[in-house]
Length: 460
Ligand code: ARG
Image 1 (cartoon, protein in one colour):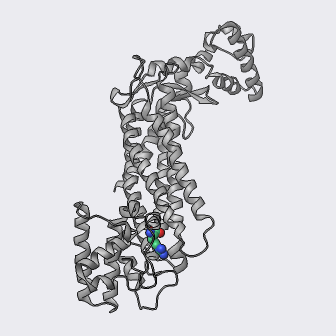
Image 2: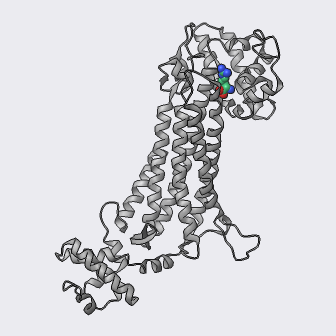
């Protein structure tokens, strides 16, 4: 029988029951629901709204239910619609009248708002260490390849020399920002909606500060209507996860390119690659491709929730039951992508010789050539033009800049001397890029240090 059978003259249609129910997915909130209910019962007793004995029965009963759920002993019922009503009805079946008192001064609206908020907070706490672990792996890889010269690209055209370490560390900085974004989200969501009631608070003399404190929130939410209908934190989480996936996906794309025979900058470990059912020679970067593909799901989850929320008047509306699945899906996706991507990077092998060979073609020291002339007092724009002409000459004669004779160079500018060959050497081009944030070894060492400091500050 339905909770609300008093008001109704008929049973709910079976189709409506199935359509309305959220127990199929919101049972994930059972832990938060029980934690929230215990805090609520304790507060009700502290304010003499229910008796101490009833509060104790409720608490013991809920903890029993928690144990039974974890042991797989509980079967939820669609007739009880959602996790909140399922747990309340199991509790009442077990402990009688005390169970019926639990929902005093509370509504499912503030209850679900509380549960979902705590669920998101718990998940952020789980995801952050995994991103930090990924960063740790990147620092370890970067440390090995600080002297490995490779071409840096713009427009996917070889541009200027960098090191493989510099390349990897660029991603480590993105992931550092992803962590701080999630921390921001966690900090902003940390206000407690419990006690907002259905939407208009309650006439009972409740203590919202007590429940907020007990549930580790900074304070109760300031407005009861906002309290029950705010889903900013879920939209913010999905935005943060979407940005994180964008970073992962860009990195995945690099991995896919680097594994190709056209690049062959890296090789994935056999345990982190897959073969083909027909082509015996194939070794495919399926993991990176799936990560790139799954990014689309997370973007979809974000769009889905933004769209659900955009036209809802205050306060609670049933549309908001649609907030959970996109959040669960995005969290599941991120949680499955993170460890497999991290291990794939940890076990990948680089081919520094191939990177160096690629760096040798494509005139990535042309800027250095122009800078050489500029440092010998030629205005940069003139030096840039002369170097462009030199590159055209090289392309026509199938040579690199460093293969030109001093005589050939001098025919373009008198300023060229023997030391131009040092200036054009790729190792020097990279080592001399000492500006803050640059690819020289001192700077990549500083970057590794900075990221490790960040990780340590979060692990402390
Ligand atoms: N299952 C509901 C949800 O997820 C819980 C809140 C129901 N509140 C209500 N007034 N029908 O949103």
